[in-house]
Amino acid sequence: MLMRLLALIILSFLFAGCVVSATEEGIAVRVIDKQNDYICNYVREVTGYGTASAMIQIKNRAAKAGANAVRVNYADYIANEAGSPIVIAEALNCEFED
Image 1 (cartoon, rainbow, N blue to C red):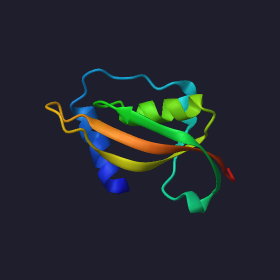
Image 2: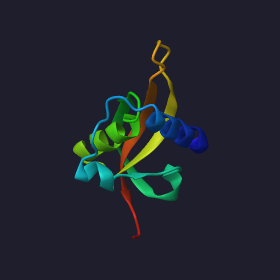
Image 3: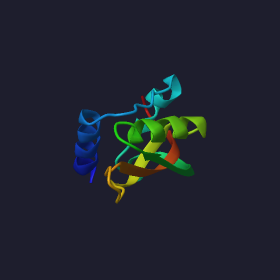
Image 4: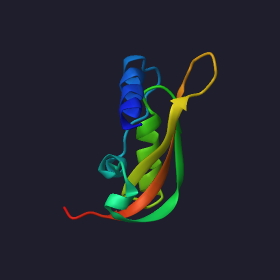
């Protein structure tokens, strides 16, 4: 799942149209693979759409909601002529040791 997501993100950057800028807070949000590896509290669901910006959007939205991590639940392409990616993730507050 994580490899598919990374491939989706890389391909999105190659075909970038309109790019969303990462906020300083969004840059600090970590992407985690397994919530069980950390002590985390669920904040809310966040979504991101569009070429080259879906992951940036979810990290920005998670930071705005007060989260410090996201765990991707779903990543695929929207069935439209543009084939835009969609990412759905959980925004989380996690305790990190570093």
